[in-house]
Image (cartoon, rainbow, N blue to C red; front, side, top):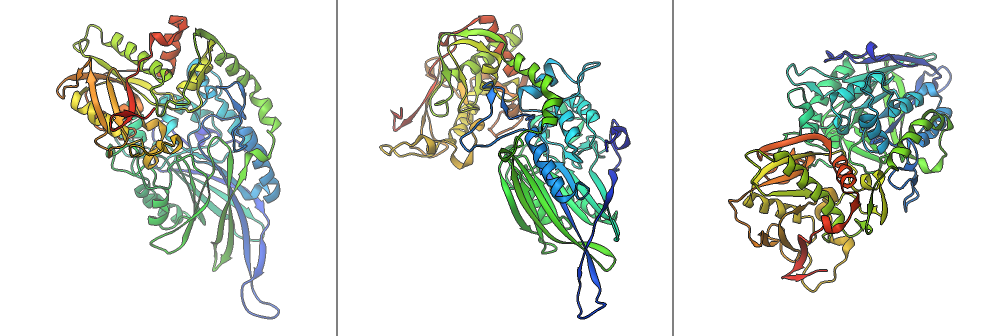
Length: 602
């Protein structure tokens, strides 16, 4: 039954109150609990299933807005909440809806043109504005609770609060606190009571934890307003409270991966991917729905160091490609329910069809966005692609840096920084983006820049720029001169993702991949002369990198001289629209190349 937001959340900070609901009565099984012969006492048992998704990123349908076609990949995956809805319906039919709980582990309202449209083009925050399509779909499916993801904050707190208001379920974040009072700014937990025929009720608590990296990645929106303590410390605070409130089962929905690593260096003292640490260090947790890392974990068991008990973790694949199931077996002994067993498994969205109820619900919103992204904004003189952009200086990435340079130069005109040379950073986000020769649409340009990053201008010295480039060059695997080069193994050294490798425009340099990391940048010049350590530059950089994302040296602490809230993707569309013709002669240049002992690799 729908929940009115005002029943469980105040606009500012809540005071530790969660959400409590009662479910319908469910049957209970009985089994012998010991002893022989007639009259032996039989223990009561109950089966509960917790379902979970994560990192939906605005995927309602199995549709690729960038290709204007059904989504398809080599693995045969399918995406979207319409598919998940069918899976959820199947599980509820199998298990009995009254014995199920449906959760999500965050990153809901950012990631596709659909979510961008209702944040920026026809925003939900406008007076009389629309209901967010993710709220509509998730309300219809019947989610019980959703943890906050870091991307929930990408459009600002006002948009997030409006989305929250439109949801029939709470957005949980025990470690999203008011920066001044340190009291929870969102409900920390959700508790549901399952009525069991012939036995006491079962109380299930869900603790929501989000990512400390929000303080870095969305600093512009949250600094001074919200703080994000570590998952481990907040779980240690809240789990005992939930147990003292009578929780028989404690599930954590955590927007945090399992690796124990962080991508923001020492910008904050908390671990980004802390879910396994929470399981290992905090007693009293039965299972953790994992998010954030975009990996598939059917079942991972972590032994708690305090109790010696196993905690079961599961992470369903992102974009609604998978649904996690936690099947709990409970036994009633000595006056209370005890979790006797937990096992996790995955259901695959590609095995089912869309739920027509969800399709009907959001067909108009989908059609609006399809029309929007297919608007023609210019004409390209030749096809541009990112296929080789990881290891060759590709003109399509130069387009991004050129736009960023132009925007920053114009913004700094007339200021004390106007005389400084402007460099720009960009990453090869996609390996499949293409701007075809001929008509150029918004979707073509959106596929090039898939994130809702905004632009920031920082001042760095020549020495700092060199260190920045050396760090970026760690992306390449060391490859001896004369050795065969396999482009599939050349990049992503140490697991570094493509979005944490940067081009820097305005300079000329070589990356010698035969050398050890840290000494690869060779022949680094500016304006035809060797780069001077003391020279000052303005670096046009996206807000993720500017705030410390990727842990690139110097940039987070460098003086900030300008920033804006308009997305870089929008700036690219504006630039192309103003030009009318997209000609590489206007933006492309060969700034860098891979070498080995001075010999070009390609």
